[in-house]
Image: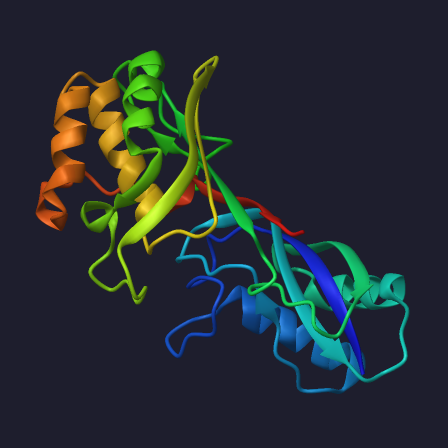
Length: 246
């Protein structure tokens, strides 16, 4: 038995999220099916994190145990061949120690949220960004975002369906920058609550539009109440960027 670590890119649009679902297709299901077609083995693919329906990944990390004698390159090539035409690609595959775990060995996760700040409708980036028509003040968004950095009770920014044992998380980084018409929000932490990034982005957009001040964001955080949330940003702008390991 060999444990392989996978680096995965995917368009989350067609899927109900990473994890197997009874009511629709999943990224995990598509990859496990491709591995079965490659090896004839029923496997479980463990990921560094779960994603909601419509959320994308640039560098999701996962692992799988395979009995069949294959090199990492041959396994990657075969999985990719069987994944077509799914919008999922294995970017890298390598052998790892038997005790390496995509989720439990991970010491950090990074997400990126992409906003296209223009009045015109989406064309090439439809399903891959959140279009916000009125001008966003990215500098004000970045300044306000620093309120959320550090250890806090993030109940306000937590989905009611979140299964985390505690709403307290340590947010390492939350940066906002403008690149032309795009406004990019970068978030990094050991782990995140369900909907935390999307909820934080929704509130930062309220700041960028001038509907909220930094004080309003502070009040929402202090409220520890989901009803204090400004807005939950849509999933299509969110990307799992990378998982960090020792």
